[in-house]
Length: 323
Image 1 (cartoon, one colour):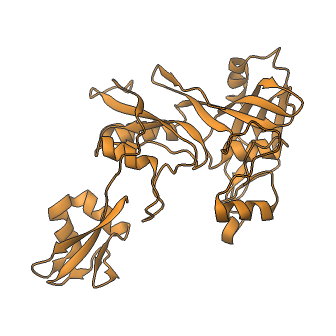
Image 2 (cartoon, one colour):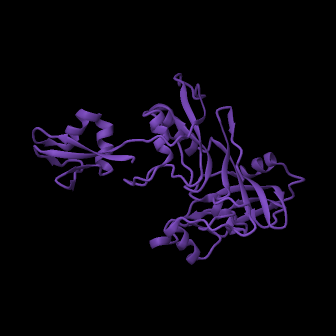
Image 3 (cartoon, rainbow, N blue to C red):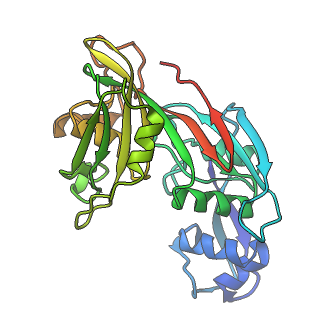
């Protein structure tokens, strides 16, 4: 169980921040208070609150071994001038149907369990959806974590995904559609939506993936109020009358971007029961997390979406999909 209760003895009245900083340091104490992980007499203790001389309870993240071995690890010297300390990283190949991070104080296992079990100082630099498998990049120390997160925020990490979609897709696409995650409330609040935007079609025999990437980089993102611009390259790899294996290159990193963009052009990902389905079907999935297989698809009880490649700082890592 990731979160465990630890009893702490407060010997004399004092500020909660002071008490915790003596045990964990100032930064960690602030995180504990901000995340509501510190209690006394059943009351959540916040920053600025006083503790009395009594027992207090701390919720600590205690990682467990999920048996997921590191996919790769290494180090590099940053290309930025003035940076001389190496960036240390580790990569995991996340299985499908596994959280990247725990949800608040939930005890459901997540990839972070394995990362912290292997190295308490390590942390994820980004995340994948619960249903999505594939490569996840982590920093092995705080400096490395911050540096890698900045690379993602600055779109300096090259990513490729492989997916199986419903339908026969013979053209390559550049999808330039803004995405909002504020469309729904209540039980469907996690589901986003793509606005009408720009969809460019190309003959994959005339344009390579690299040429489409260069062209996509020149486009201006379509923007909308309460939505963020999003850009995706879709490149067909193999198709029949029912399904198509596609290579996906996201040039932005919006929540559920690939799933939303593909569903918006009529090619939902196989076994995706959040996008390209009715509200009723989405609710059923969110309530049970049960995947009822798309008919005639390869029988894998999982979303057919895999983070296949990561490229950064002259390095490249690939992990083949299992579908």
